[in-house]
Image 1 (cartoon, rainbow, N blue to C red):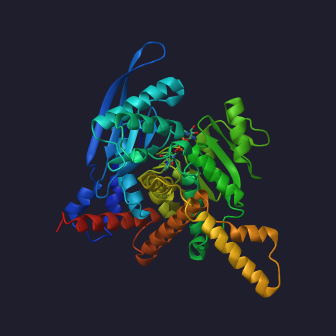
Image 2 (cartoon, rainbow, N blue to C red):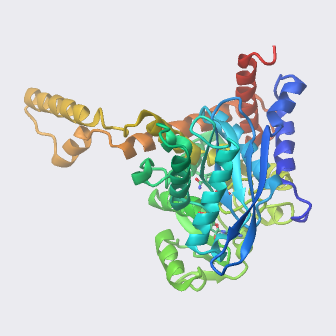
Image 3 (tube, helix red, strand yellow):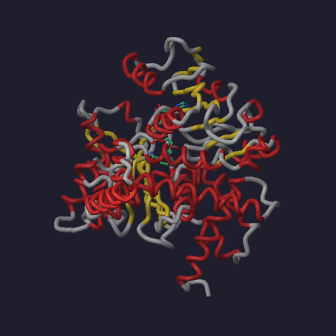
Length: 472
Ligand code: NAD
């Protein structure tokens, strides 16, 4: 199917319908859950550095308000369109439900290629977009809370919070109008690497399941697994980092201009620095360069991690993919046709909908921090350290033995914000993985893990709707 015919939203609906058959909910309620509640499509003019006026096309879609605020990132890409934003907004609803983050789903998109704009132009576009959202009541700590996504990061989130605060003077919880902010602007430690770390925690949990690995013909554990990552942006870079640091071998890294393969393993930081210096990933010393980036997806590996954009694995290339596990770090990297190929080949697809939920989970922690106006760990850190120190000295006194200095430091350490955020994320990803796997194991007719994840999401959203009493 060509890109033009392909509807990402339709493919999400298709996956939803496939899963809905395994639930007991009323047809009308399922229709309501599937629908996008509010769609704001906008056009606004921005004067560029050369004096030219450009009309900017942008969107914000709120898929569901079964819980508020709505939550979802803002994407800057010249491929943005309403269908894509609707699909991404619905995935956010299901994602939040699975990881028990009490938000409805939303997503935003601005149709620009950020590489073609100066930072001054990007700032003007971002601030005007925020002002449009404020005018229509599409942003606010209790309404709709954006975050980073493809093509955006801390810098854009800082512009958004500043614009919002200047238009809403005196609003005490204004910092909670957007997440993924720099720490100095109300961000939380650990947000930057959250999605990649969540991908790692989710895959690690799946790889620890003996029965699942047995069926794939793989050993349990991450150590020694050969991994290919597509996209060296926020999600891909951090995912690659956590896999390598935990003993996986990064045999392949792909960017849009090309890819690298090295059976002995690559270091993502060295490749990142090389690309920054030379402007391209290609010709990195000691690795085989692949000019046509998409071919890297078909190279030999155990785990393939698409972490760039949607629709990169489809009915055409899926039969040639050698990985036993596909971990969807990006949103929607596989089409439904690819899903069918992998289900028949016995390849395990760990679905985007929950696997990349690390970002929204830590965004939730950031939002809670903003509403409580206090950083995590501030109240308990010293208390815990004093208590641990007291317990240790009692143990040493009673046993007549001394605990080593390194161990002592480890035991005494009271939690910093980053410790609590990482621990909350780890707990979230482990619980979600187990919950989805249990649904799958308890209903052998469910064909794949994505369908099991949708069943999990549908049950939670439907329960929430029925508890609201709208559907007696
Ligand atoms: P990003 O802009 O930081 O990085 C994306 C990278 O992919 C860029 O380096 C880009 O050059 C590269 N890329 C683009 N096309 C490519 C191609 N055809 N082949 C190889 N590389 C290509 O974006 P991100 O925030 O890392 O988001 C990546 C994906 O993860 C998106 O699907 C996004 O929706 C999803 N996601 C992001 C977050 C988050 O917290 N940032 C959370 C959940 C899901």
